[in-house]
Image (cartoon, rainbow, N blue to C red; front, top):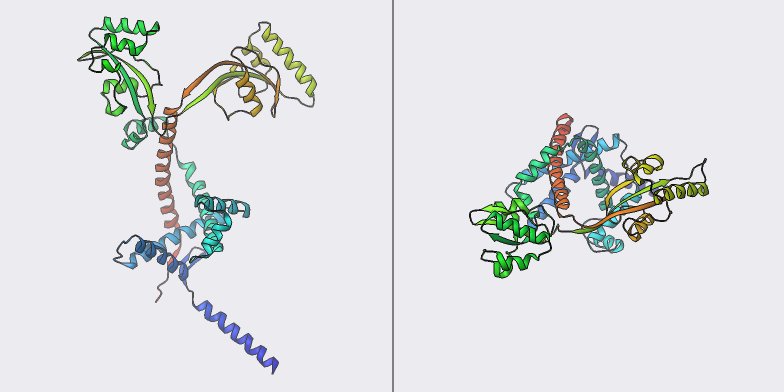
Length: 413
């Protein structure tokens, strides 16, 4: 009797599995992969749920079904490409990504898992979805990124002509002095160059209506100013004073007082140069420091820094430029180098110091508080143009992948 019970149990179990399997069917064959009916239904339900939440009327559910199927086909094709290319997402990468998602939702990982599991989905389903998205992103970057080429001319044209970039521009606070003749304007420029305060001079000699306010105009973006003014001042740093600008009213001298906006940023920067020697199997640490100190003494005794840098420095990036590193702010160089650079007075040859690259000494040639506004705006503009071209190229790439694929959409009751 016990054996019969076991046999019946096995039979019932097998029958149950068969019944479960019949609950799902193949909806689409995509090359050597399959899309199941449950995937399609889940995608449809998610879209319909979003429509209901946003009170969007649904005129034809068949259109939603077609959209979901096409989306799943494109995803499956990209996952197959990723699999053939050997794209793998490690558990560490996946965990880091999920943790970031949780953080973006202002939760720690445990709270996030509980939140997901308490809803209609599960944490494991979420992980699988994220894993697929990461594979798809890598496939897209690999196939699309190398196809995008933005020329300097194309970027310049985009900067000049795309109206969407206007929102990035800062507001400017400008003062002016207006005089009748070019002779008066030149005298005013000479006085300013000799240290005369711009505000005082505006009150004394300007014939503009804002003279009592020391020539101060309202905050405005450059495109809202007269073209004569905007062309002269829009990309200039704070403190810039224009040359005389002729208009129907006379000659204007402008001073850019301040900027404000999301991309207005200033950075302390140093112009420095250095000489680097690296210990090796042939030259140990002690000999390296002795040799570098000899070079340093030659500079102190009058030999040219740039000549010795070209001859002896082992930094391939700066040696040919006489050791010149250009203008750099904080967070770019090794911490030991940065600390020495910041703590060294202008024109002084520093002591020898060590970084992960070897032994150095440096000279700070100049220091400035640099206005990065224009650079940041151009960086944002480049990212926008790149994103636009990326989307265009991605659409073309996905259309090509879809056209080349074998796809059979099953007719299901």
